[in-house]
Image 1 (cartoon, rainbow, N blue to C red):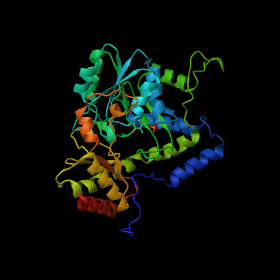
Image 2 (cartoon, helix red, strand yellow):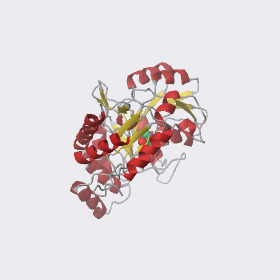
Image 3 (cartoon, helix red, strand yellow):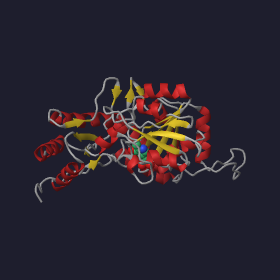
Image 4 (spheres, rainbow, N blue to C red):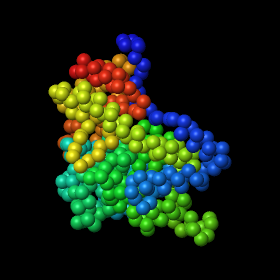
Length: 368
Ligand SMILES: *Cc1c(COP(=O)(O)O)cnc(C)c1O
């Protein structure tokens, strides 16, 4: 293989320090291995403080966090829920679990996030909720989305699975709608192995979600259940890992900005390349590096990814449009369709070095 000196550069890997090892070891030694235990409480408390929300509730993963929030809001088969066409499939699937109709709409070219104009066009009398996604770490236009929602009496649930710590005008995502959901999967900004969190300021919603998360068991009468609940709890072991990561999040996010600046300095002036958005008033947390190859077809894009792999560089294609998948209905979303097939994500994990990023940028430039 060419460049045998270069070790394989993965797209993502978690940053595990002694703190993570200590907390997880402590949790497992304590005997509190399931969902009771001090780390769950500490993780929830610190996360709610971090997001500046009144409540935070741990869940088994980000997908069920979204399902739980929508279920607690009473979304059902009669309802329609608007989601961006450009997102990870879980956003739409969680709506589908409730039997509600998934309405996929187009994105804003600049932010890659759901287009407020497209939302307005998609609203009907059946619309119950909008799930904006803060894609790849860039917040969606929550001001406009919230205005539309208020005018139409619709819930807004933020899918912040990729955007821990992202902000609009100094206000953290997760606290900008009725509820926000996060993921702690191994490749996300911070991880608990598998895991999720729901943030909210709404006390009644919080209590309802907590109840449904724990099999909807009556608080007064053990093993008495009045509706169909779920077991969507996080374990104390996961929470121990998550808490250690959360205590390091400022440092982790600083590193993300630094890594983005390395890519930016090397690729910003190359014609035909567009990097992650950098907009006034928005704090993008650069979950992954986004490279849009403006003049490329899908085949040419896939070919570049193949070549990068031969040079020991891992990459990912942008998400495919949800509406093109067989479980969902075809809709016309020209921006999503164009962008999704010409973008790639490049490595941006905590321990990547400036030399490695230079090597990736040089290789990419040669290939183009
Ligand atoms: C990762 C992700 C989810 C789901 O999170 P899991 O923890 O993997 O279930 C949902 N939405 C988006 C946008 C994601 O990236």
